[in-house]
Image (cartoon, rainbow, N blue to C red):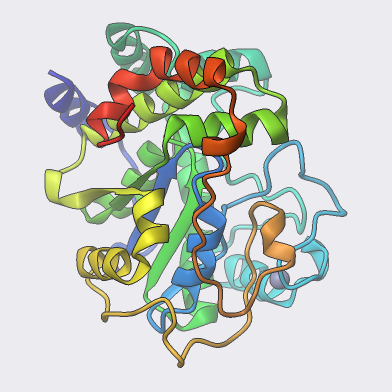
Length: 327
Ligand SMILES: [Zn+2]
């Protein structure tokens, strides 16, 4: 049912691309925090055909004039983003504030209503109805199109400035998928990056103070929301990668990703990797080795108490088992 419903919603969209004759290639990383997305952004950005700026915008919490790009400059002073803003304005007539990019789709200015309108926290049927209403109400549809236009101008400008052909977007939020589908149509590629929920719970507890229950629920809802959004794509347009596999055998996983994305084969210690990075993401962006290599962090196996492991598995285990994790 989800496929048909999503197809119907796609028909309802009335978005006209900025450059209809030049299709955009975007590989979108969807998933939950602490899944290795910043690291993968660095790795993908060193590919000769791929450009990544990590997340499309600093998260609301970190957003502000002091936020640092991975190049070490404040957002307003970063040379790459200055060039991108210039191209956006001159070529596409879209202006972007140096700090407040306004690229993350919001349904309303009210944070609470926005949460209700975009997040996957209800039964599937409620989500279907909500998404339908969002497309049928002209003001809301117009709102999504407004964000889509800004994003298209941004992505096309980054590609122009970098001279590369595939944009790797590591924003992770499932709510971005409908916006990107407007821009890329059926060409949109999605990489669903998953991590063991116990590893996520350990990281989310340490960095964000989430309880085990909250972390397990967050992990489950966020991944289900990604699955809900993926149901509208052709099955060969998305892949699921496990963070642990990426760290254990990066070359095999990178081969899978490059094959899927249709770019040249590539290994994680390719000596040709060089160049500067302008990545927005977690704190590792500021101390990044120019030749980053995935390192498996499974601290949770020693540090997460048995009670926490049991609790997280009780709440998230069914979905985790579907992704190939074992109790
Ligand atoms: Zn920068």
